[in-house]
Amino acid sequence: MTIGRMSLRQWVGWIGLTVVLVLATAVAVWRGDILRASLDPQAPFQTYTPPPAPDYRDPTAWALRDARAPEAGPAAVFFVHSTTYDGGREWNGPIGDPKADAWLKRVVLPNYAGPFARAGEISAPRYRQGSLYTRLTLRDDAREARAFAWGDIAAAFDAWIARHPDGPIVLAGVEQGGDLVERLVRERVADDPALRARLVAAYLMDVVVAVDGLSPQVPACHSRARVGCIVAWSPVSEGNDGAGRRRLRRALVWDERGRLVDLAGRAALCVNPVTGSTDTSPVEARLHQGATNATGLEWGVRPALMAREIATQCRDGLLRHTEPRTESFRETGSWADRRKSRPYNLFYGDIEADVQARLAVWQARLPA
View 1 (cartoon, rainbow, N blue to C red):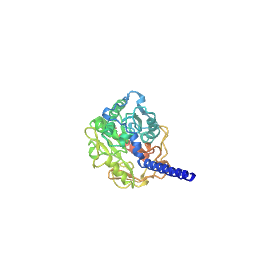
View 2: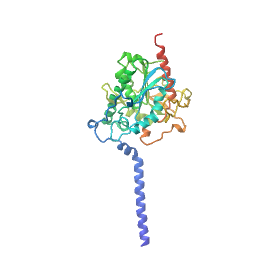
View 3: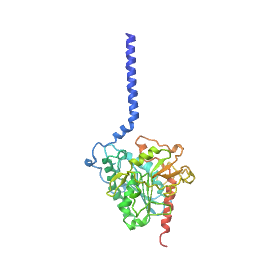
View 4: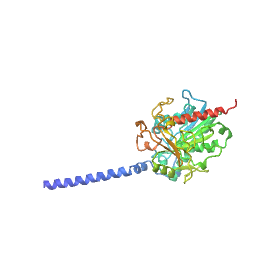
């Protein structure tokens, strides 16, 4: 009896171990799909009630409101942040979500708004952003949620420009913020001669932009000597060809009716931030002006830069680049966090130098 019971126990134990291993393997294989599904609002966008709209007369509707760092220049900078809200119940993030605001303050602002601090005072609106889930699917609901965020950015821009009626302006956005800045250029700046004359440049970081979708009035920045133009790039590690193909295949761009549509094989814009030009020649690492991990830094503190680290090349509409080997440039955090903008900036020093150079060109054109 004892031997029989032991055999039965062993048999049950092996069965249990096998079940655990199968479940663990399934979770490992389908973990991304499981987590992605957990962020799905499970309701059509057409029947969804968005969170209350922000009031941009209220300073709390701004993550930064005319913030001025030491040695800031004369420009007014309008910065639109990337995805910080994961999703779940909401298609569009509510204003003041604590977790989203913490990621914005700790990661996005120091790494991506920081390079513009020396150009002038910076304003960054909070807005009902499309959730992270809307960037993980090509469903129509997700496209509508991302397009919905445009209304907030248009309202924020109008309030901002009313506070800054003259002088040079710089527009900047990263990831979905860059998408929205592109539309801002097209619908607010391109057809307004007064605003076009004030535009130093629009920076669209980590954004796929269709070349044939650019307004002739605000073209690509073909060289660093040009102003009133667009600097845009979408970075992919050198050798990661699969990621590059996926990025272009899944890219969405604005059409003339304000809808997000497939890129569908159209040529994508790449302005190399290291050279400030559309030149497709390889750029050696010795010209790179500095990567940094500014995560956690207080606003106004300029981070230390690691120069001569990254070789780059604009190729097939993407910015191909080498990766630094320093531990501070490793992606960490949760599954969701690793699908947001990187918690460091490989081109911080290059962006900083680019906007300073274009601002100097803009100022040189002023009448004596």
